[in-house]
Amino acid sequence: MLARLQKILALTMLLLGIGWVAWALPVSMALALTGVLVLALGHAVFLAIEFVMVYVVNRRDSVPYAGFIAMVRAWVGECIMAPRVFLWRQPFRSHAVPDSLAADAGVDIKGRRGVVFVHGFVCNRGFWNPWMQQLKGRGHVYLAVNLEPVFGSIHEYIPQIDAAVVQVTQATGLPPMVICHSMGGLAVRAWLRANHAAGQPDSRVHHIVTIGSPHHGTWLSRFAFSANGTQMRRQGAWLETLARDESASRMQRFTCFYSNCDNIVFPASTAMLPGADNRLVRGAAHVDMAFDESVMRQSLAMLESAT
Image (cartoon, rainbow, N blue to C red; front, side):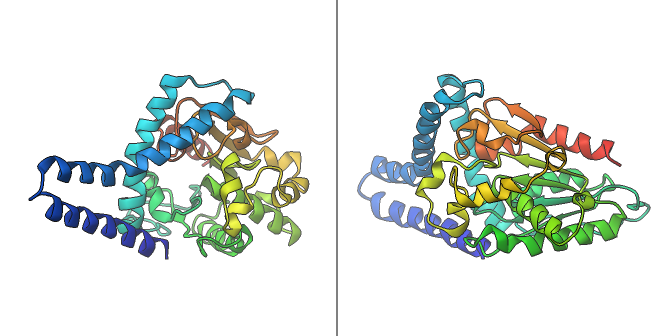
């Protein structure tokens, strides 16, 4: 569903651009170019507004504060990364890297830990293409879920995560590592809670990596209207209920990457969990952080050391 929606958005923008140039070019080259720039860079304006909010709100946070230059660099990085993800990778390349649940010729996957990837809000499995390309040829199996309904309750994603964990476990004989971005971290926590209620141990997963997950909600969620968006409100009933049933031993299974330039999950400390291995990624924006070289390297190193 999301891929279709984002395809429509991308193609609509392309047609608008072509139509504008066809109309404006006979009038003025400058007018035609101005329209194309507005269409191509409109998202940068919205991102700039988000970064202004981050710049103000994070001043009162406990996380080391990022200065103006760091914010500008993060904004530039996000302006480049966002179209690559939302207008190309997810709408048109969401199945470019298929799940890998079987061994390649000459590769024994038994005893080598696999990975379950869980994306965030308004994303799909195409988000993880660079990660899955990294795992290809390493002898690790992986599966990336598509969380649907796109704007439904986070509780509705629990069966999808459970099925993915089962498939990867059956393929390798080992509990998988789970790597999540943004809302995906909350979906996995909700799955762990339901898993425990069903009498299943947390050890069904080896470790959980969250990248920019709003574990304590996010300031921006006050503007949300969807079911999953409102569940990410700070000090909201859903998040308080989720945290109430979590043990210290469960939190030790988490590594949480968070950034002082995250333009979606802020204040920055909201992406941390008490008792988890919380790791600061300085100067990285929300989407861009998921593809930060250090984040990917550290996460894959955890996977290799766990086999």
